[in-house]
Length: 125
Image 1 (cartoon, rainbow, N blue to C red):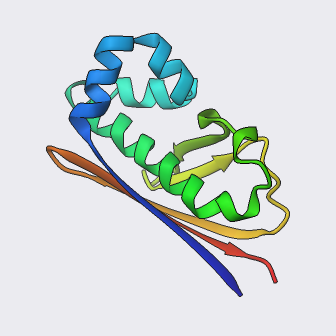
Image 2: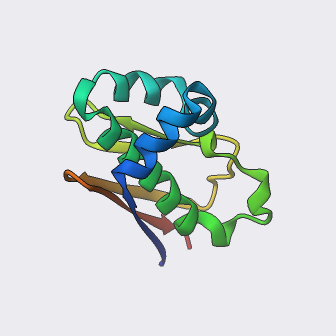
């Protein structure tokens, strides 16, 4: 069994500032349309959710980077954070070979100032 883990933490104000300064340019470079729609639906807490998804994408890159030959071949949008019917975050990968991946578990948390995410990948033997 081969397990890989990634974790990230980010200040919510950093994401908020980037969105306020760069607007749609920043949002469309980092987030998918589904992610933007989800975060905007959170109204006053939208920046916490953007930051949580940003941290999740960073954590995913850290967890999956050893199985990617060229780290420049992937983009932010190749990692999409969606929610299941219970609200639990799930990871959807695009343009990434997932043949060797058995399962992926993701956890996102945020408070007033910080968002954090943890991603664990179980690889097939």
